[in-house]
Image (cartoon, rainbow, N blue to C red; front, side):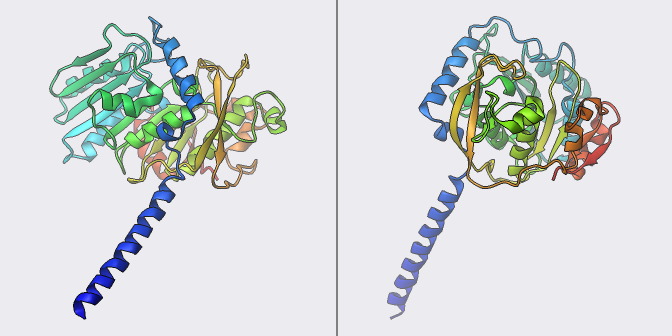
Length: 360
């Protein structure tokens, strides 16, 4: 009788466990998985775009600072990394990535400064570009601060590319930066998801600038009255905030009025959960000469939302700045987003700014 009861209990446990796994599996699938979910025609557009980029002998001027750091979100990335190393003395290896690294100026500058600081931890500094480089793959074998400079790299398929290069770096990157790259991709949202999932859970942060995409009811042709009333730039910012809020991760937004730059963002991965964006692909549309949206690939990807999101309204603390051109008059040191995250980065900012409020 005991044996029979035990068997029944085991079978019931197995059934319940299997049911939970199926339920969890279906729950996971509601989040965007770009390498599995991209429609074939979107993947082909990405490959076509890469084939054009890899022919280029020279990198874009903005993809890599002429000297020193990017200072994305007004943050000195070197000081931020040194603080992360200081706060985690038990961690032996730190990983850093520059997506769209130009001539790898930032990668090399960071290595140089770490040598000067004589940091005891090992730091692995990666830079990736789609364009040709002097060597397809170049490594500096300094045992303490090793650099990896990869040209002809399919950035929009970075999970596959890193695996092909023999790097097991998922959940390992402490700091990811990207300047003037996401905005030129066919699928910047899918690329953002891949980069987010590379971050170290609980401590990893990513600094990046604004990129263009649309939700299913939006258009770039001009028949969306909300877009016309706001202007394309403001619509992009609203879409970015809507996207970042979906991640449930703490983030900051730095508005800029400088002409040769974009609004920038910082996000911190709070846990082990993969990037929880409840989106599916709808289509990608050709950006036919729309000058307000400078996109090298020429395409903008649209998404269906699997969960309804409360629209960001004009009463949100950030949007009075986006109305009536007040947006273009703000102090460039001011930041919106998560207050705790802002207070953490204040010591590493280039210049003093103010926290102007949560994004609701």
